[in-house]
Length: 223
Image (cartoon, rainbow, N blue to C red; front, side, top):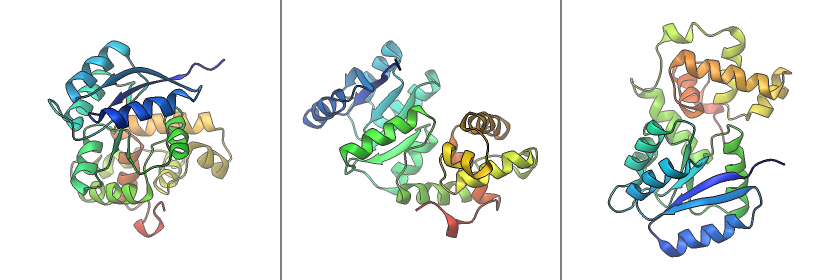
């Protein structure tokens, strides 16, 4: 039997947080291991409970969600932080990803879609809406600190470059595998090598780098 995905929920709005606990607890694939009402508590609980995923609000007291995300991703690289917030401000989106957030979702999301995306996170997919993804791609495409230099991209094999291009197009690991007629696990291994070679944290930054280096065009970006 597959082990449930361990979740930590960090949100200072008690009613919303408890509602989320009740919602996700109904799914056998999830286990709520801790809750936090501010960023400091989120960091402490993450270090104690070692969750697979942290659902993090941005605007919280004591320590905000962005700083908490930075601390958690630095201390616990295997824990994936997904921002869940009402904020759609460009700066919040950009800072969250720079702090190491694995994804960025709006609280307007439907319960079914949230469940689907959290399951995707456990398989290495980055949960982003099309609008959010486009914002991030544009930001990192023009930021000098966003990723690697041309010399690093040149070190990728032809297969790795193909996968990077498809990744930038918004394809999942399974879809990339089908397109290239290779196993999904093979795609995962290639992506791991790509991130290591380019010194990047996640799929989003890799996709942005593909855009910046001309491997992919914004007009063909994810919808």
